[in-house]
Image (tube, rainbow, N blue to C red):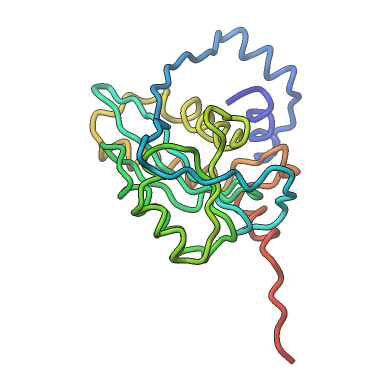
Length: 225
């Protein structure tokens, strides 16, 4: 965690402290992290790419836009891939899966889990990775009546908040552990994501956790008279 997040965690636990003081202590401890990031967004030349639909859009409701992405997770020996569905407005991780291969079936699995648990968004946004342009994944999105949006090639800024999620997962969980097995990685990452949703406040969410923000941002359903 950075100085701001450590401060927020301490404040939530009843220990008021300033960001600068936390930062000073971190410097004294020499805390830093270095990591490498192999590409997980390689485009398949034979797959159709869909246009980016979010430019200029105001995203202020839960289940308005979901984002999917995949990242690389190093272990003590080897690596795995983590795919997650994130609600754009609230930053809540709706579903996630750790897998040993980068295939469309894993993206379909995690999206179907999010559908089952949280309903249907208006738009599903991804990058141009082959797992997301595959027909199996595309048809899963369209079957629920969702629009499919894809970031421009190399335009990581279009999906920057997901990149921030990956940074949090790696700095606050993955790099602190050398997982000995895929099962250990699954259990530990799930535990972290549950904590992330329930207890990690965000400055852009006015210090709410993703769970708190998600509930407050759900559209109000008007009951029939």
